[in-house]
Length: 263
Image (cartoon, rainbow, N blue to C red):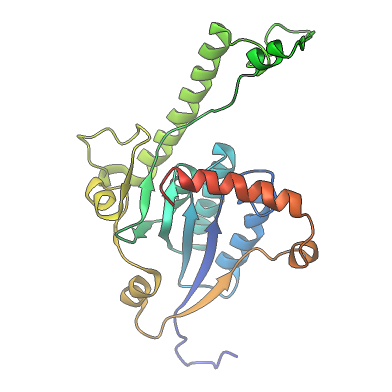
């Protein structure tokens, strides 16, 4: 209960943004799931700041953009500063989200960067041919079967895919340039998909410093700072262990994404 005329302790709202960024998959990080959580964090109780605790290897460019845009919109509407704290990794889409913050901090051993776009898949045309399987595809529209994994790759399909990837990559670069601006080191290409540990990320201007939530928030708001923690609530099915197949699929995909950073 607030007592009139007495100074209130500064309060920081914390939001955990963890896991693969994907529109589908139980437990994935996406705007539909995290949006209401961010709304509450920014608007409930007039916080002194919002702290984002990020641990994500990336994922969907669209969901990354939606989450980042929501963070900026809420920050501007409420005039609340935003701090991002990288835990194990903020790579690719995870870094896209981190850049939405006003300041970014990481541990010395955190992984930061991987500013790029990737498309991966498999080709099965030789496999099915060896087993006597004939692929039959009929389309209305010559590009409707683009990149069919059961047919040989076509040069025009590859060219089209690279054009789309480059457009996404350009949007990623524009977002970082707009948010980080002059803080970035100008004499090094940061957009190759390479990633760095904490101190190197500081030196390159990708983050603002090495630090953890409590230390940085105490420096900013004093030793009496307190926290309100916000997160996505698990459904009853998740709490009692239902939907196991979906959870396992999401877990496998997530572990594969983290593994590329040695985590």
